[in-house]
Amino acid sequence: MTQYDPRQPVPDPGQAVITYLLHAGAKAPTIHFAKERSTPHYRVYGMKYEDVTGRQRYCLCFLTRHEPGLFLVEQLVQRPVEAELYTRSGQIVGTQTVFPVIESRQ
Image 1 (cartoon, rainbow, N blue to C red):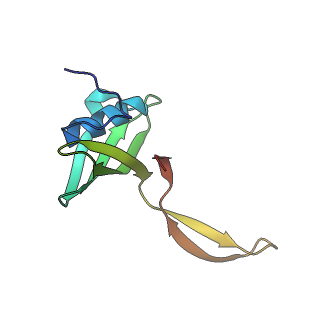
Image 2: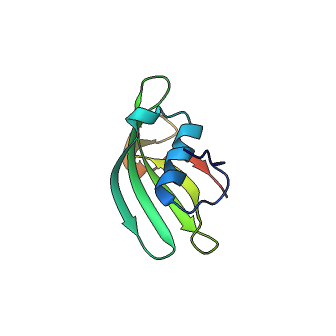
Image 3: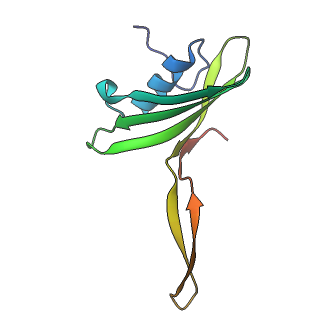
C-alpha cells in the first residue's frame, strides 16, 4: 500500500480519509465508513473508528476536489453534542447543538 501525505491531494477519496484518520491517531483495523454523500466537487463521509487511547470516535470528514481527480481532506468534525448555555449567575437558559471541529485546514 502506498503511503500518502495527509496534507497532499490524492486521487482516491477513501484513501485520503483513511490516511488522514491514521495521521490523527485512529487504529487502522477499526476505521469504518458509515455513510457517504457526494457532489462532483465535494464528498462527505460519516466515519467511526477507535483512537489509540481505545475511545470510540465518530466524525464527519469533508473532502474537496482540487485539481482534476485529486481530493483533499478539508475538515474533520466530531458527531454533534449538546452544549448547555448558562447565565453569568450559573443558571441554565438553554441548549445548543454544536459540532466540535477536530481539525480544519483554514
